[in-house]
Length: 262
Image (cartoon, rainbow, N blue to C red; front, side, top):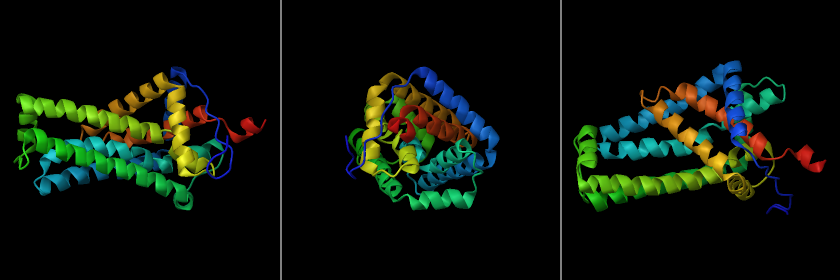
């Protein structure tokens, strides 16, 4: 089957839970071997999370801190592109440098389109959060502090319904974005394919191995949530390991060009 650019579709392989575990192990090894890049991208990601929380607090919109912090995880695959390149260089026996990583990232125009898709879903995430707040907690709802917002959400029937519906819709959006990006960003970095083909390949990978992929998604969510609790500082380690592991999982999910040709 050919892609929209006239090239052959990437071949998707079936994976198991063992592949997910092995990808995590290899991701940890990459981070241990080249910690500078991991700490750099992890620090940028953590700083972004802190900035978001401080911004909504300063503007008196503390009720958006939770959906923003949760939705912030959605853009993780885009932030981790540099880590995919580090793993790719190490795999090829090359020494990665920051200028080379940035040059590669800028040279992949299709990654920009994929980033737009990610941003679009993030915006949808925030709109649905604001809409649900208006529906269940009031159009003019205002909360002096994050503690008061949490108290209302957890101790009132309206708040509990908001929490349940919001998490259900959020989980659906997160699953959609995960399916579109789990393979697409590494694929766009590795090969000359268009972003539509990359998204289709990513969805095919999830459909072919649903249990391992959903398990991988669960691992990502749990680790990111736990890492975000101590002022996002845990992301200094978690993001690099997950980013490197995502590259290795991509390698196990999409057959190499040489193997396909052979």
